[in-house]
Image 1 (cartoon, one colour):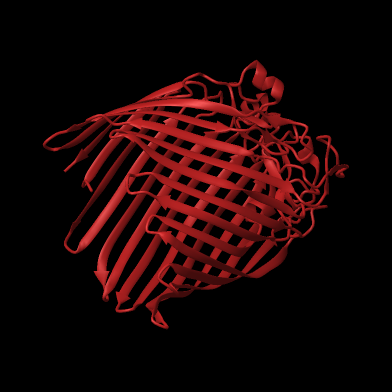
Image 2 (image 1 turned 135 degrees about the horizontal axis):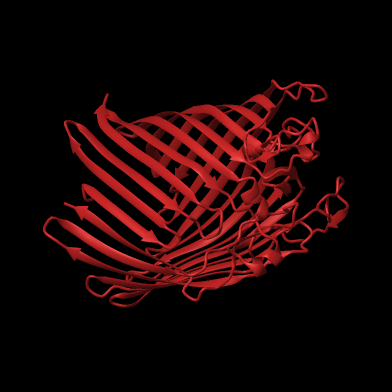
Length: 538
């Protein structure tokens, strides 16, 4: 590739993105580094954001293998949150922010630095990989929770402050050989990760001033660590058939040490351990050099994260250590066909049944709680198609149909302020936040140094709460893109322009599931244009 690249583009709402990449080699070391700045006023009121990122990789030969140092950093200060809107607010003005977003200056800051080392070596039929990483992450978020609810001595306040370090190790060994004269590939390994996080909560008011950091209301040290062992084998047991089998054992331990024990707020320290063994197996058949069929079955295991454990659905203090891990069984069959003239058709059918599904219990004033809702099923079809229509004209299509539904009934709240769930969500109900269908199409024409493209993206409607009384309508968007390339002696110059949402459709870009204030809807951007330049030197 090119040793260096500069790129910049600007668009509506004072959106600016500038990036640089540099790569090369010298004195036995090769390097690749990229830096990026992004800033925007946002498509809605109170949605300004800024983000700086840096990624770098240094590589060299060491001890008969290859050693790589990976570095990355992210700084995103005071990203404003306009919060969700009610249906009436969307109809009145989709670009507005919720009044409390301005009142409490809702915002989030993230800072993260991470470094990793990876050593790989291949010798004959064997290969080794050792990897270690460590990082530091800090998050501060101001929520629009009124002072009233914070009078409860068990309340954790309206400012979240998380700060902590994390790290991990991964070691694996691989071997290429044969079994009964047929190719066999084995991988075995172990990995361990640990995160230690200091979680504090503060009131978001001082006196009558809101949106500022007030008194301490939560102080705890949270630790999560896991140790996994895994093995995988791939065996081509005949010229056209191959088999893949694997197994992983995971043990995850959460621990919380409460340091805020004040008055009626008790010691909420606690711990929880999850473990599971999850196998997977698949078979592949090469029907012809252009056509391959495959099938796979497996089991899955997903523990709650500290985000999901952070707050109890019953309003009590401490972590939600009563949450169970979700366990799933999945099956998939598929077909991949790639013709020599460039046509491609990939189809897969899948089904996943989950027990103890983790779902949003409540979303109030920017704070989420979670619970297990029993059995669910996701099943569907994914399709990708590529068709050259002429020498310089190509069509790409992608379509997903997904049925995500509840398989065992559970109780949910019909009203926003109910303390005890009172309404049955029947088996067969749709899972909120999941569209039934999504589609994407791109028609690209590339005459000479020019490139023109027409894109269409569509989504069906989305249910936004457990009891399905509210939904976001489906939508279809059109985008236009144009670009031109100049090949110069010193490098390549490329100019590009883009118009998103050409027809200026009003639509809901994302939803906040089970929002306690009925502010489920986050409108997508209206019509917007952007232009950019990229310079790559040789």
